[in-house]
Length: 192
Image (cartoon, rainbow, N blue to C red; front, top):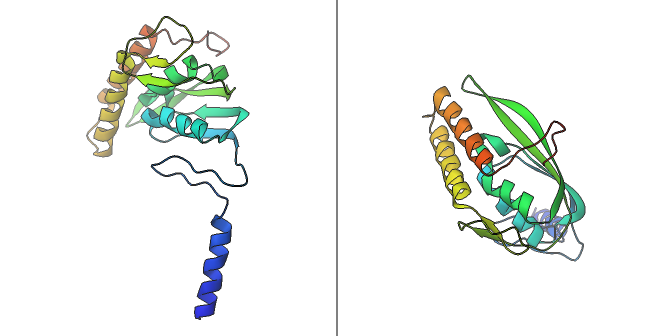
């Protein structure tokens, strides 16, 4: 019985050797490189930019990788959206409009699709937007505040204290802020 357990342990160690694990720290590298050609994000939308940064920093995105992010408009991924559009590492932006049904409310949402191009930039959160020159991606305070609103409504929703009117008001707020930031797309669903 003990030999069986030791053999099982050795097999598990072999399987785990060379794999990359996602934790609260940086992604580790292994002797055999792992690169993703497709990333689909549908978790906490206010953390999408952190996911991208960790994948970039870990060298885990293959050049040309496709990034698909759900819930970009509702409940919102404002910092991710700003970063993806401004950092110079992504191209080919397309928006896929979808409708979410939340507590009886029909709410418009977007899925963002883009391609990783691997140009070097970095993110600075909570300062005034720059003049469009290359360098750090500075996230406007309005988007930082919107991200906090997204977190707040998500937390309230987990406690089941958000109703249809709350969701509709939040969706209107998100769209309003996005319009002020001049996030828009044309008839072909490509970013202008």
